[in-house]
Image 1 (cartoon, rainbow, N blue to C red):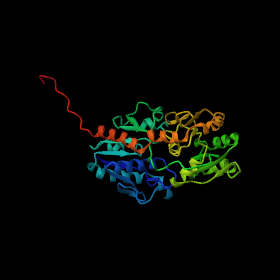
Image 2: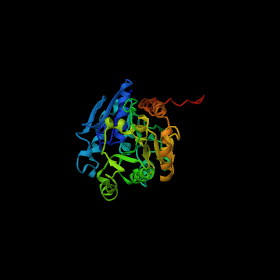
Image 3: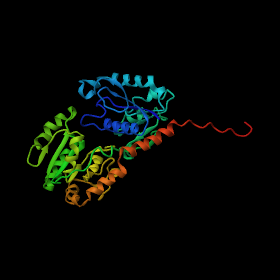
Image 4: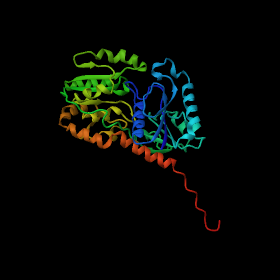
Length: 351
């Protein structure tokens, strides 16, 4: 198939370090190319891809001050897509509502994967205007605030099977991976580790939007004997970081649509201890790949049980459920369904 992948402009594809949506777009794009499809990636010029790259701007917006002061970069991105739309069998957008007005008025089939939360008052105002636009959720829980939008499918994320693999580790600390922010639960992670009597290693991005929170609340808690901040890490550092941990702590305090760090931990054979929020019950299999808990006390109890989970079995379960090939297969099935010409309506005898 001839497929256009349309990425956000805040991070390169793939992101250099932290970045969720752009990472998924990269994994999907590379898998589709490996499967023999003709893929074009619309993204930033500093992206690295096996597909044909159409750059919408030179560099990722994370490195450009005041990027989001207006929508001009996304208007340029969409105009570039529209000029090439006739070349594709399907257009696959990952930039929320931005393409809906344009894509709904042209003939090439399209779909939009929504990567963010939908419990916002503006969601219905915009998406209800395009009831025929095919939307894809990344978990069933993501749909809960707006269950009657134009959902075409749920396709949960997957990652390359060989990107992260288990390595030897002492399992003598707990891990926190991702971003330092209130909703990611860093304070709960620190409380869990201290109550469990274990060290906590924190590998996380500190974004501008969370700098004040970090300085006021988190920084005083870091750098002690019990809590070590190792900084923002890339994929090369993740196998050792996750394989060496007794468990990954995922004590989120928001309805996260899909937490990639959960499947990254599974790829390394690391159990996940997660609060029951968002997509967690769709990803974690209790007692098999980790534990789903209700609070800090439950997480502390799970830490004591984490070593009883077979880490090789966690890795095997990752290979069965969470690979990029499975994700690509599900999207291809959806592409084919959307791109298939509609059958003409049958005429009644005598018409």
